[in-house]
Length: 72
Image 1 (tube, helix red, strand yellow):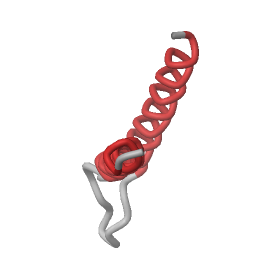
Image 2: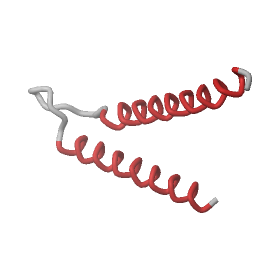
Image 3: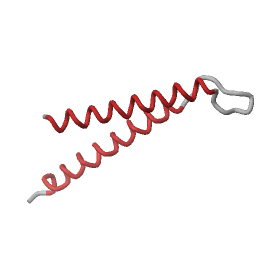
Image 4: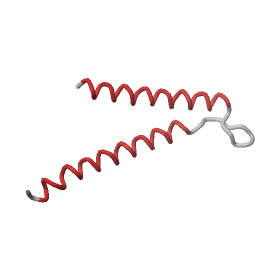
């Protein structure tokens, strides 16, 4: 067996996992940013509520993607 047949699948697997990790980190970072803050630097209640809703939407989207992959 040549080395391309050995390292190719391993490289694709690592690349896929790194891309998924990076995408998840980016989405998490974007949803944790808040629009408004109180005087002590904490997010305002409205901004915290919106960020929580965004995180839940991302969670549902990931679940939907997982289900559609299983159905294929």
